[in-house]
Structures are given as C-alpha cells and as structure tokens.
Image 1 (spheres, one colour):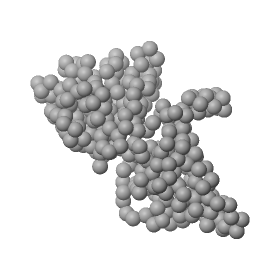
Image 2 (image 1 turned 180 degrees about the vertical axis):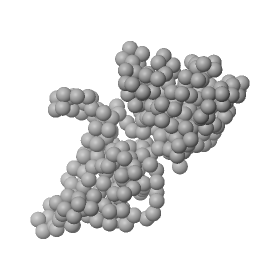
Image 3 (image 1 turned 90 degrees about the vertical axis):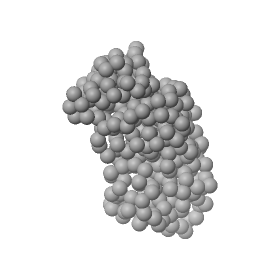
Image 4 (image 1 turned 45 degrees about the vertical axis):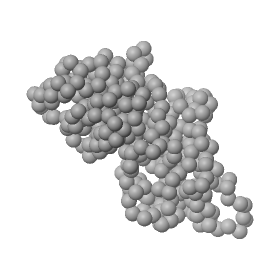
Length: 314
C-alpha cells in the first residue's frame, strides 16, 4: 500500500480481500486520500474505529454483525423457528457471530434456550446436547469454522436433534461434499437441513449477465467475490464519471475528487448487485444477505433465498 499511494497515477484501489490486511492498509491509504472499495472485508471495526480524515474506505459486502443479525431474522421470520440453541467455537469471530445472532434473535422475540461454547470432549458435548434436547430447540445456530460446525451437527444428529435447521455463517461454504475436510463432506446426509449465510448479494439483477460474460472470458464459474469485486469496479468508474473534466487538475486533485465522489452518502450507484449506497461509515446499504442450502443432487451449496438485514444489528 505504501508503494501504491506513492504512484500518483493510482486514483482508487479495489480490495483488499481479508480484514486483517485492511487493518494494516487503511491508515496508509487514508492518509493519502486514496479511495478503497473492498468486496470481501466483513470486520465491523474497520469502519468504526478512530476518526478517518479524510474518509476513504467503502465496502460492498455486509459486516459480520449485520450478517449474524440477518441470520436471526431468517431463522425466525423465514423458517418460522422461535427457539434456538446457539453455540460458538471459542474463537473470537465465532463467539462474536454467536453473540450478535443471540442478541438479535432475542430482540425480535425469539427464545435462546441455551448459549454455549462447543466443548472439547465428546462427553461434555453429549451432556450439553442432552441439556439442550430437554428444552426442545427448533433450530441450531453455530458461530465458527466449518469443521467445528460439523462436529456439532454430527453430535446433534446422534443426540436426536436431526431434522431441525442448522444455520451458520459462510464459513460453512468451504467446499462441496467431495472436497476433503469440508463441512459438507464431514456431515454427509446431515447437511440436508443446513443453511449458510453469506454476507452479500449473489443473485442481483445483473448477476446472470455478469456470470455469462465471466464464463466467456475465463472459462470458469465466478465466485461470489468476483461479482462483488465487479460491483466495486462499477463504483470506481461511476465516481470517475462524476468528476468534471479539468485538464489542469493535478494527479493528487483527481485522486481526492474520486475519493470524495466514492464516499458521498447522497450518491446511489447502479451495480450488478442493484442500486447501492454507502453510509457515513462507508458500509453498504441496503445490507442484503444470501442464504445457501444443501443441494442433494449437486451435493453442494446452492442459492436458496436472500434477506435484507438493513436496520438489524448494531
């Protein structure tokens, strides 16, 4: 990023992919007034810590807290389940996701019958599930990695809780059933009632055209992040188009004009995700999520639904 901001010809950056990379990059790009649009960073704190000046960071993906809260809305309103067992994997992100889900589920009127951390021993896990079974939860939400989610789901099925929805984050989307070590490969038929919540929209109004063009260009199917990256590119191009031509504008002046246009909260950008805008933090609105379910024919995750998480979470 230090190299990038030193190149006056660069007026915007699409990326990064990982939140921990963004934590290192943002202070550098921010000081240089360089617009960054990320298709993939979901850590809420990236846009809520400190006072950026000038403000430069935007993202087209929804934050983790809104995704977890949106999952709560999905379980309660779409699946019609009013009581849930909530478990985390004892890691920072998984714990936070479970906490955000539980808080929103309760706020919406649902009942969290138990809020637990996944035990390390099989005996402790059996005891926890026996306690949960006695309270008859209608669904399970897990915050954490795919392999740990598989441990919980397999044990839950053995304990008599098979057949109820099992919901997790996009960490469950770690490969199809033929991928060694993936969630789907580890749970087998137990995945038939599983759902994963992706913190972005992958079935927007321009998605079909984008996918066809992508396959023609690359002879491969695009990942969800490819579409989100393309949406970032559309935002950058739109920001450039808003700037009045001025042959006398300096490279630094152009860079700042692009930044100002990109973060303008009054602007709506037309993208393959549909119309989007950015709030004062730089977070996308509306906050649309994609729900995946297990396709028993393809033995893989498949698009099942979408839900708007705008107005939920923190």
